[in-house]
Amino acid sequence: MKAFPQQPTYTGFNEPSRVEADVCDLEVEGELPLDLNGTYYRVGPDPQYAPRLGSDIYFNGDGMVSMFRFKNGRVDLKSRYVRTDKFKLEQEAGHALFGAYRNPWSDDPAVQGKNRGTANTNIVFHNGQLLALKEDSPPVAMDPDTLETIGNWDFNGKLSSQTFTAHPKIDPQTGEMVCFGYSATGVDTPDIAYYVVGPTGEIVHEVWIKSPYNCMIHDFGVTRDFVIFPIVPVVSSAERAKAGRPTFGWDGTKDIYLGVMPRRGTARDVRWFRAPNQFASHVMNAFNEGSKVHIDMPRAESNMFPFFPDISGKPFDRERAAARVTRWTLDFNSKGDTFEARQMTSLVGDFPRIDDRYAMESYRHGYLCVSDLTKPYDALRGGSITGMFINCLGHIDLATGKHEEYFVGPTSTLQEPVFIPKSATAAEGEGYLAVLANRHEELRSDLLILDAQRLADGPIATVHLPVRLRQGLHGNWVPATAA
Ligand SMILES: [Fe+2]
Image (tube, helix red, strand yellow):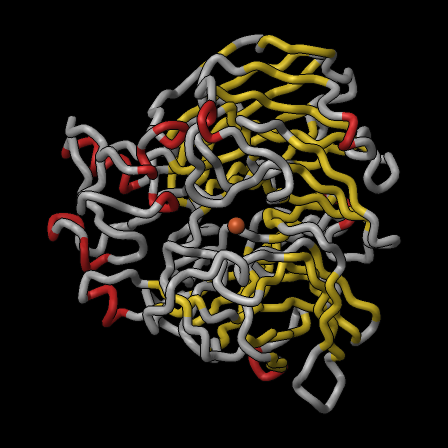
């Protein structure tokens, strides 16, 4: 096969690994708690072939799923590519056939109209199914034990949208999966298809609504009674895509919107609230107190994604891209269309997580990847970092506003953490954080286990991997009792 280009996206820690691993009983420094009993699944981009167009953005790589299975103080690793339609077609051809991110007009004519999904963004477990997700395509089902790809999952033929979010929300009380697809009728369309999937995997509620403008809707908020669609101007344009420019770009002139609807509402019930131009992408949690709806998101003054450039040609502004968790509050029954904003922490970062047992309700503890530029980074030993620079793990106590940080050291960075409760009945926040550390000097990965209530103390166990897991996107914990 053709060599990958010598570009930051494909070299150093980012060099595609393409390794499907099975490692039994990983080496552990410290002690793995005996109550860690279950599986941590995570996924990230790991391109199978050199990019068709000579370069590509990191987010367009093929999905590689890793699974860490914990039991009796031991942990095994398994990693497998998701055998997407794209993966199989390209493997057969022996080279890349699909072109730029979310740009079907840049594909080899031989694959026109084929499913472009890479399944590289999130991996969730619902109704006994493991689903690998990419927001431009339907879920891909995998065997939760072997990681064999089962195939595209369309909810027994009921998925009417062409797309499915990488951030569905599973209700810890009802077992429902609340989800949506945007650009639901194709690239650069305003259609949002909203679904409630019952605990047995059937679509039980479906609503089609239109976004105020065509844009990326990466995540959304779900409370006990409402759903919230954040509309942020990472805008799409088929014209730009056809001209060979990025499909998505930042529009610094447009307002943001929060589209709010009762969970079992209809398109007529949607209310649009608005605020001046700003950026937000991920949702930490959302909850409501009667008609008062709160959604917590890392919020920045401007675009956080340099690879989706400003459509007016303005250069990327790193300072204005700094995100801090902010609580937006609106009243669904109010006459106006405005909402309030309250910054919840001074920590700068993204990839927010919670104790998922408290999803959709009032909660106290939040965790996130933090970029702390007051801490040293040794570029001579670690090499340069491309993309988001995550050197700390943060815990925010939303009740007191206090925070705690764990610094991973001057030659390492971190991936998204996952919270693991000590037991099903443990109090909120009583448990562990599992997080992959990228060891840039050694070009290797470690999985760190921290006490979620004592982050500053550092890991209680460090699981040494003999392989490198490229920077991933999202993952989830599945307790042994649920599998
Ligand atoms: Fe995400």
